[in-house]
View 1 (tube, rainbow, N blue to C red):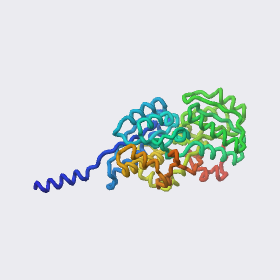
View 2 (cartoon, one colour):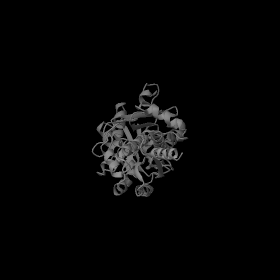
View 3 (cartoon, rainbow, N blue to C red):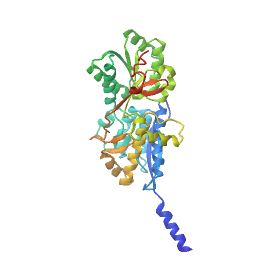
View 4 (cartoon, helix red, strand yellow):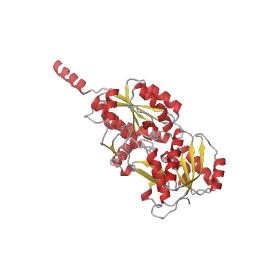
Length: 377
């Protein structure tokens, strides 16, 4: 009996796995919390599935933190996470201004992180920080496609509205460059603050300029307010947004007024991703109360890349960072992931979306693309 008990005890110890913590940071409260919660749930899904894998060497725990989409809060949260030596790596940030403000923190503490949603190019290209990786693409490609798309449809006159954060200013910079290059005319450019409520002054001037398209470089809450106030003033221009408005919250906030709005995002639509259907099926099985949103698949991929690196190198920050730095042609649900010399994933495809009948529809599948509806009407 004693021998049997000893054997059972040894077997239990052999099967026990060490717990490894990884962090998730995103906006869990505030105007863009839908995106942050969708990202957190997606990273959580990756952890749950990994913990069900009998071949996994470790048990994983996700430590979630709210950056509120505010740079000062982001720095506080990043410092708390990065200074905790029990946390090996992080899935970090939807908001570009926050991601940009925290890179120095991750570099200082040597915490390898994988950005899952923020698109400002300087996050990866502004420094040569080996700790900072990004699985999604940048706003450069987004804006190139956005400019070529509508000029290709024959539109010529634009007004640009952008928020005055690094995110909004970056979108203005790249979109303006590509629009001018493709023959578009910029009638006026208007910077607005992230918490601005009333756009009457700007929109009154815009109405006088008679643009065919209003381009908006900013996030969902401001986008809803601007689009609503455009309607009140009778501005009939096409509303062309960025990935920042690609959320269910945008359509829910505007209702029928969202119809015909445009958005552009890196990668293929989730239903057309190599593992998209499998991802959404597993996501739905967990009965999360909120949708994964546009960047959920990227957060899921980031968490998996991090855990795979830990499985390979062990729970050591420097070793995990080295594995992540050398990521090349790794098969994921978003397709193959390869990092360039600044640890930026090379995402060749940008998808175009239009709001149609209360949901975001891939442009090529829409009634607009088929000529059955017209933008701006």
